[in-house]
Length: 243
Length: 88
Image 1 (cartoon, rainbow over the protein chains, first blue to last red):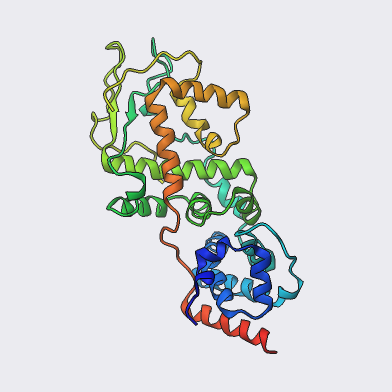
Image 2 (image 1 turned 90 degrees about the vertical axis):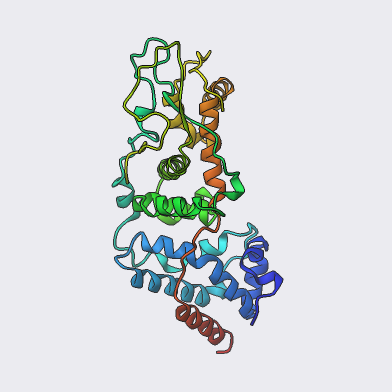
C-alpha cells in the first residue's frame, strides 16, 4: 500500500499518539509501516550501542516491534505527539538483550576532555587576554540549509562516523532523529548531564570538521602581544583531538 | 569577519571557559545568572558568538542525515506479523 499523506513518516510524527494508537488498534497497516519507517533507525542506533553485532541489533529492533504489536491493546492513549511511539517501542523490550550497558560506553570517553583544542586559545598567563581566542572561528561560506546539500555533507558524515560510540549515538538520536533529551536519557540509561556532555562533544567535533574543511579561522590580534603559535596561520590544521 | 582583537570583556569569562558551557547554554541548562554572564560575554565577543552560532547550526542541520535502518525483509516480516495480529 502506498503511503497516504497522513501515513508518510514525517506526517505521522505530527499526528497525536492517541490517533496513531487508535489507527494501529484498528489494524491500519499503512500507519504501522510508517511507524516502523519513522522509528526503526533510532531504535537501531540504540540497539547497536549495546549489542555485539549489527545482525543482533536488527533482531532487537524486530523483537521490539513484535512486542509493540503484542502490546497494542494494552497501550495507554497518550497525548504527547511524535515521540511516545518510540518510547512505547523501547519499553516493549528493546533493552532485554543489551550486553553492554550504555553508561559503560559513555564513560569510555573522557568527560573532562575540552570541547575545543586548548591551543586555539591564548595561554592562561597571557598578560592581557588570558584564555581568549588566539585562532578564532569565522563564518562558514555555506548557509545553514546548504550544509548537507553540498560537499560538506561528506565531511559531516565522516566526522560523525569517527566519533566515539556514545557520542555518535547521542548526536544521532538528538540531532538526526530529533528525539528530545529526556527520551535519549531514558532510552540509554544516562543522566541529563552526561547526555549534554556527549552531545556537546559530538557537535563540537562535527563543527571542527566543517571548520577545517572551510579553513574558517583567523588569528586574532591583540596589541601585538599575541605570540605566534605553531598552528600554521589561517590554513586548515587539525584543531581538535582526534576521535 | 574582519580581524578582531581579543576584547577586554566586562565579565570575567574567558573564551576558553565559554566554549565549555555552550552545550549547557544551548540545552537551556545554565542557571539564570550563568546564562546572563555568558550572554554578556557574547555581546562583546564576535568569535564566541560565531562559535555558538555554528554549534547551533550543526544541531539544527543534521535532521534526517543518513538514517540507517533494518533490512527490508525484516520490515516485511513485521508488516506480516502486524497483519497476523489484526486477523488472528
